[in-house]
Length: 209
Image 1 (cartoon, rainbow, N blue to C red):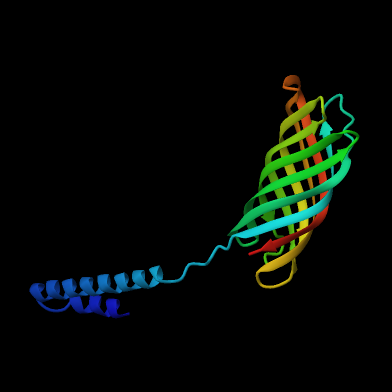
Image 2 (cartoon, one colour; image 1 turned 90 degrees about the vertical axis):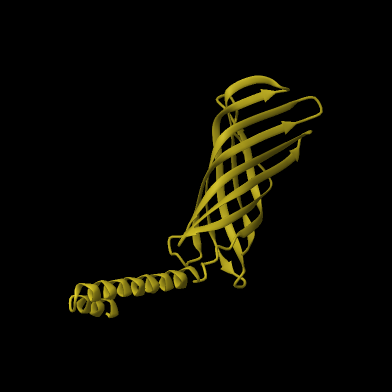
């Protein structure tokens, strides 16, 4: 309003007076804009709090390929992850998935590193869905042989946050990791380029923010 009144005042008077009034008005406008810019810059930014998640679960892992049985073996599994808010109802993160089974003279394991997206249907709600795409490796070893299959693998999952405090939550979760068209090697020798891995797990995770 002050600037508009100043523009009307500039129109009156001699040319010299008009020029002086215009210069004064421009200086006032610049000072007003500078003050507003400083005020905006000094507003505190919304904190993006990093969260960490550690989960332990039951799991069923399997080696998959055109001539494999694909039978899942039960064992101990889990997840370790970090997530960062991207926007309301959306979090980006990186997860490590693992599974271990021992029996019959051999040890089988799955290790995976997967970038993930957590999507919350209700922005402030406890339910979330998880999608990711990363790399997984299935390993089976005994005293005489070692079999490995490494493949690009997708991850889907769902979880529900039970808030323990403003900074922590207990999360029941279910996830499924699956990949194929990976390199399978037995004692270092190539067996097939169609090897893969499957891992289903369900358990509890603790998240700290």
